[in-house]
Image (cartoon, rainbow, N blue to C red; front, side, top):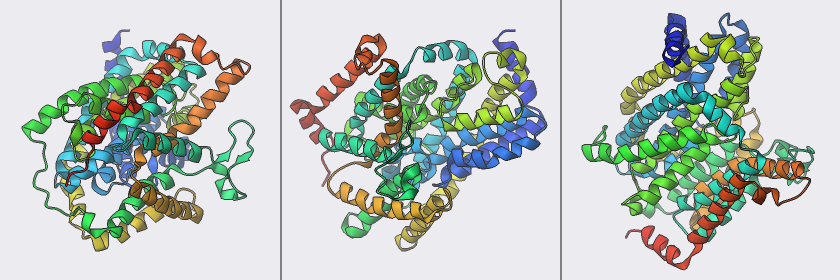
Length: 502
């Protein structure tokens, strides 16, 4: 049975009325949880997982849960653009240029660009999933712990390009993020580390607490500290659709980021996060207007959004083809399938093709539903910008506290958010950027896990990272990127590019 026959089988399953309704429910919930910081697809799917016990059709269950996941990639950009508070980990980089666009009265353009880029990337990513599941899964299997450690190192070093200050400060923020990520129980021995006797820290710091603190709370404190630097977010929104020039500038970033995200999404770990940060770094390097990045470049919105949505689709490859979850959301979807008596892996594609291809076909439908849902809502979202600062600031803090508390109904997370918010404000005042810190925090545990696993496999021999060709090549690229970033000539060029305008 060839690809077209498989897709025909899938669409016959996905276009059933009840499956379309479950797909619509999933993407609508996904958009909502993406917009609201503090919930996220992992928590939402975990809460809804018991409901799948009552599903007679496993296809309907997996279609709804998958819709929540990739729908959250759409919704996460909304608060990142409008309020500088990422709804999703992969949306943190979108705030770098999306929020300045909102401040310039181009919030509608930014939201439309994010939705269109996400739609195109989601469709292409689904085609990649349909056409290349086997080859891509085989390629991902060649990456052992040594190679994954090298990939993470390269991603962290490349994130220096995200910072608008010195390379040294960017490196310091990455290290700080990694250190924050080590708080909690040891991955292998379960011994508490850096908890200082506080039992609530045994599970580590919550991503929501860190992200909302260093982006949202720190931004509010910065504006309150010096009202002269405050840019009115409630500026008049003149255009709700990208201009011809905007559309021309979107094409290249969308294509490049879609390709990058499609590849990185297959890799285990935070593929969609790496894809978003990597796409931003690539666009800033190849752009003819690097001085606009961080100040409202539309490429800085469409690139990351396209990358994380493409990665969201292709992250299903190892789950469906090999039964290996690429990240926590995929692990929950794996649990949903097991609840239904299905063991994902190579056999399921032949034993139950209607499940696999019904899910793949539903992604085409889901991405279409998402763009139909999100584009008309742009006018509603930009109305948030009409709210005065005197109302906006308390409301943001209130929602941030509610979302953070809702993680596990623990007020300790709210306290952590407040402390980190003050710390983030101090770092911003010192000229440090929060994006590398957040990337270090997200990827730090993954870095440690693969480092220790590779050393365990090699019986403590660090040469394993250099004797494996792929790992050695990736680490060599990381060293080269680090050397180039700290060269005096490059530092001077960065200072000129990111010089503050009067």
